[in-house]
Length: 72
Figure 1: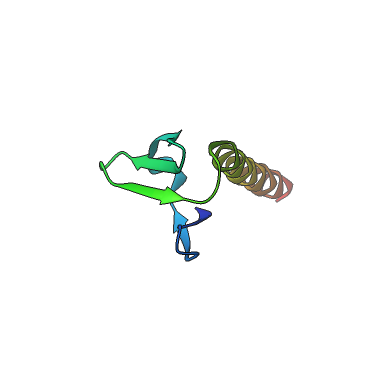
Figure 2 (figure 1 turned 120 degrees about the vertical axis):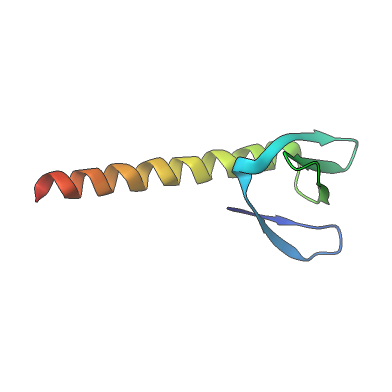
């Protein structure tokens, strides 16, 4: 999950695996596979960076878990 900010400054956690696309119109609109859309303060590039960091963390955690399992 990544944290984004709605235009009214409320924070929201979203499942980045459900994002279909992100566009700037000029507001940043995140469209989900369900068809739902939200407008956020973060730029398209910031959303992309958050998703990359999230996925890196998941992969890193998997590697740590695998290495621990091999030690046993």
